[in-house]
Structures are given as C-alpha cells and as structure tokens.
Image 1 (cartoon, helix red, strand yellow):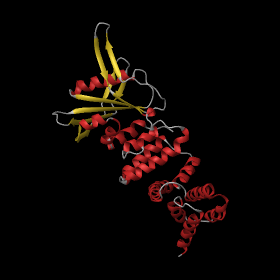
Image 2 (cartoon, one colour):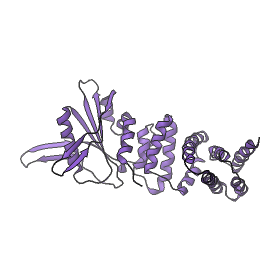
Image 3 (cartoon, rainbow, N blue to C red):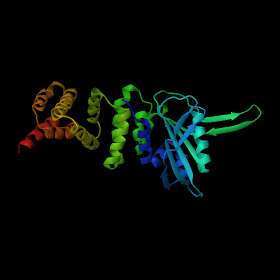
Image 4 (cartoon, rainbow, N blue to C red):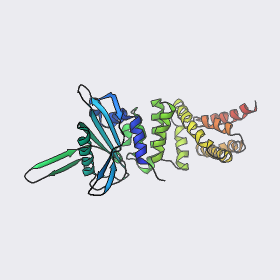
Length: 313
C-alpha cells in the first residue's frame, strides 16, 4: 500500500502544531508565541546542479514571546534514507533566509523504519578556518521509546506511537495504549478520526491481532473499555457502511464468536451458535458495543441474550 507520508504529517502537524512542539521540543515550545501561527504555502526551490525541484513541506510563520518581528519554523518529514540530507536542510534554510530575512528554526523528522544515526549539522570550511556550522533539530521516531509517551495527554505523541521503536510482539499493546490516550484527550470526532487514520496508516493490526486486542480490552477498567468501544464502534460503523451487508454481518459474527471462544472456551459454544443465527446487523452491533467489557460467561450471556430479547419486544 502506498502511503502519502507528506500529506499525513502535514495534516497532523498543521492541526496540532503547538502540541507537536510541546511533545518533542519543549524549550522551543516555551519560547514560541502560539497566539500568532500561520501556515505558509509550500515553497519550491530548484537545484540547478542536480536539475531537481524540491518543496519545503511545512513552513510556519510565528513569533517569539517578548520579541519583535516574525520567525519561521521549517519542518521537513523525511520518509526514506537520503545521502547528504543534512546538506539539503542547509540549502532549504539558506533559500528561506534569502527570501524572508528572519530567524528560522529548522526541524527534520525522520520517519522511516530503519534505526540510524542521522547527522543534525552541516559544516563547511578549511583546516585553517571554520566557515560554516549549520545545525537543526532532528526527531528520529524509530529511536523513541514508545512507553515513555503513553501517559501524556498529547495527541501528536498518541498518533506517532505508530512510528516509534516498538517490537513486533508489542503491536497490540501499542494500539491499546493509543486507544486509551484517545479516550483521555476527549477531542471532537473529526480530529479523533484524523488521529486514528494517521495511526492505522502505519500500524494496521491483523485480524488475529485485533482479536487479541479485544481480549486485552476485557482486562482493563470497564468504564474505560466502554468508552474505547464506543469510539471504535463508530469507526467500524462507518467502515461497514462501505461494504456489503452480508459481509458486514459475517465479520461481526466472526469477531464475536472468536472473542467468546478465546475468553470463555467451550462453555461459550451455545452462545456462539446463537450469534451465528442472528441476521440483524443492529443486534450484532449492540452486542459488540458491550461484549468486550463482560468479565464472566454469565455477563457475556446476559449481554447477548438481552440484545436478542430486546429486539423481539
């Protein structure tokens, strides 16, 4: 699947610019006056030597607290390894300075999956004279320990969990912690779905992993699990509207039955049989809304039979 990295990061940072700076560059965050923030159009520069055109991805006009005049913040997400990227950051800086003649804060975000030591300086000079030493902020996402960010209430940190340094066996736990962060953020639906879309572009669980996630939901605080299910059910409902009705019912039945089997074993066989006979998608959705908070087979039975009986009234 081709991922439009530039679009995803541009949307995320333009929506949550202050939160991005707060999470990863706190000293700069404390200095910037966020009452004045304006995102500028992408600037295109031509590299005459290489015969290429380059676009500055994210350019922000803002101010510093207690200082006159404007500054620029240039943010460049980099999704692949590129030789002499540090030189390109300097060229961008010099072109921007030539055009705007103001202070410029350059930031590079390395988003690829390899773990590397990227330089954050570009130097030029002689043995007898240091002519230039250019520096920029860098954020190497794959080096970040994801667990250090899960207790924050920062939406950018939540979304970027999907690009941090986790092991394959931690994928389900990362998704769970992302969902728990979303419940604490209490954002409007549009921004919440934007964060979820970003996260799942980079960390999409398999069906087996989704089932393990559902089991994990049964182990956390019941009220928190209910909130998570309300959020995810709304996404699933929108996704289901795009599919065929028959496929939607089969998928819901499969999720419910596999959850019952994994959590309660053979004692849930009769409930699984009843679920397979349900032909009303609304009943299945209502079961999904509450089932994962059931801690015992009796509670699961009450949820399923209650929803079936409620539809007959």
